Length: 181
Image: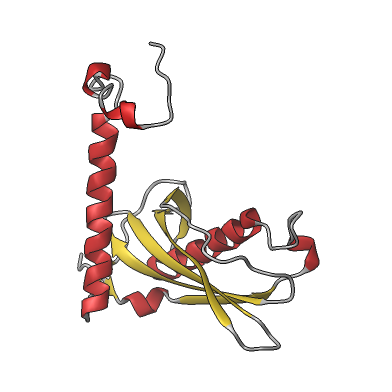
């Protein structure tokens, strides 16, 4: 069976939504949880479009809220697949808000969602390969490789069977913590 390859553009999804008062938190800005939900939907759409399968969220890499989003602004989420494994994909998402009256655009956050393609029985299914055609796409792919490698190393280092407390006590002296073990 021949391997299928697709470009990041084949996964591109752009979602724009008006921010309503019902989406706001107590400070009057849009609730971060609402934005995370939209990001998850956008990642799902991008990964599913790329793979031709329904996808589930396996993990979310760090989300930093850089600028608040206000009621009445348009929020645009731009997503595309940056990396593919065997059954998984990393979808990069950029979130921007736009003030309708002034036209000002703010970068609100960026994040990376790891998505896994599933068949009708819920089993993991192989995803197409990724065609990389410029330096930005290559940088994004390599960044994902590095992140996955570091995550796996951290998981091993801090696993119950590998963790040795005495190796870390000196490190913790510089932190606002009191160890009573």
